[in-house]
Length: 285
Image (cartoon, rainbow, N blue to C red):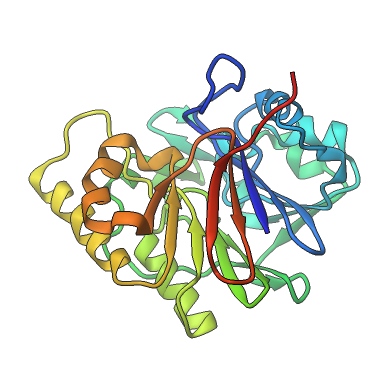
């Protein structure tokens, strides 16, 4: 399995590879070529070309939730590859806002002919499954406050029922791919354990801990508490995007090599011996 970061908030080579607030991962498995999210814009596909990724070969797209920074590149992708199947929770088409600003998806996405709107978990085949239904509230990210859904004209706190995560089973390993883990990375872990009876071997996900201001003492302790729990798992945690540098710097001393930071141009290679290789992917001129 190979996972290449096409878009993220930071770039290994900002002179050549664009970075913006968003996330997109290109994943090669034995049976599939997958996109997990599409970033915020068509800059994702410029990066793909420079990284030697042929997006016309993609057969499956999974959109983690209904925010622009994860689905903003989808219409551009569909023009380049109209044949890939796209999987998204039906509720991801909601009217989502940050304060007064709309942060939901382009409504044209809902008209794409290859879009599959889901109301539950779905197992695609023996390699791929998507899961929703995260209801726990263990250390639920405070950064969600201010994110709302407009229902009958009234803003209500977004509870992220539109969020889903992808699980890939290959070579005896289980890898979980999420977008922002708005429902809390510990609650996604609990849901995964409920479904699979074990910890994932690796997770690639934002932790939604980013904050422009300094953390309060309570927020700092919650981040450190999350890190202590994650450090006790067998999982390697790859994170970036909405986690934020300040949170990574807090978590890194606690988690050691269990925590690894991603950015545009990084490729994660996993082999049958359950070891990971993290390398900077060369790109075309």
